[in-house]
Amino acid sequence: MDDFLKRLPKAELHLHIEGTLEPELMFSLARRNAVTLPYADVDEVRAAYDFADLPSFLELYYQGMSVLRTAEDFHDLAMDYFRRAHREGVVHVEMHFDPQAHLARGVELETVMEGLGTARREAERQLGLSTAMIMAFLRDRPAQEAMQLLERAAPFWETLDAVGLDSAERGHPPSKFREVFERARMLGIPRVAHAGEEGPPEYIREALDLLDVCRIDHGVRCLEDPELVERLRDDRVVLTVCPLSNVRLKVVERIEDHPLPRLLDAGLRLTLNSDDPAYFGGGMLDNFRACQRAFDWSRETFVQLAESAIDAAFIGETRRLELL
Ligand code: ADE
Ligand code: ZN
Image (cartoon, rainbow, N blue to C red; front, side):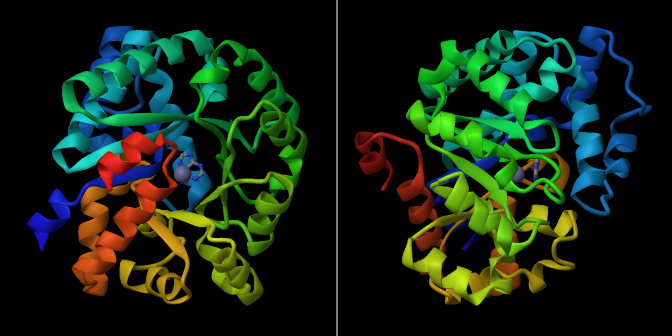
């Protein structure tokens, strides 16, 4: 089974590229850029990854990315991940990235786009790995700032496969970003949003009704609202679920308690993803393995999950047929 899971062509639809920063690379970039880290060594970094909830993780996540300064840094970050993912049988990666977190530190959008763009082309050429870009808005910052980012990204609109919504969910409903997402819609840019990770089912409804998203990132709390589950099923909305992330951020206590089997039983379209693999104890293969151990799913179930991901990916039909 392990070999089967490794060889299964996996598409990852929910990944934060800044969340792939392994402690080793964090230290090497800190040295390169003369950034001082509040840790003595990589063991101390790993020991600090004990999170109470989403906000307590985000604090370390934003601190960690302070070592990313140049286009080369973003290139190295992404290539480091693409190589790892490729070794795990990942064939396609859609990466969220957080420009506002970089702009706030004086790192220009052009720098981020140049570094990630170079890595994407290299991954395609060297690994045959296709990639997509999801520019995320930080929901715990003002909507006006998100709108400014969208306008500032004009030279890159063509490069963006989608815009997304991430960061601290509670108290920051999708409705706050209605105008920004409407502008993205007018520009023809597809939309996704994190909803129902820590936030209530109502946020999932808002993301669908007000932001017109085509996928919900996480969405696991939909089960608290049977009518919403029915709607998600009838409208064939894809949920990009991140099992190990949910355990590490205490959305669920143990992987065995994860709602994935109930979501599957409800007939929802699901995909498995790693979210922030460097922080949550593993990449795509580890997430697939954790589900296998916890739920003892059949090969057919894993094939179904992997096919849903390829089906819902931001790729052209030629690439989709190649992967299916
Ligand atoms: N940013 C990075 N990881 C995140 C997550 N799991 N939820 C919301 N925002 C994030
Ligand atoms: Zn996420």
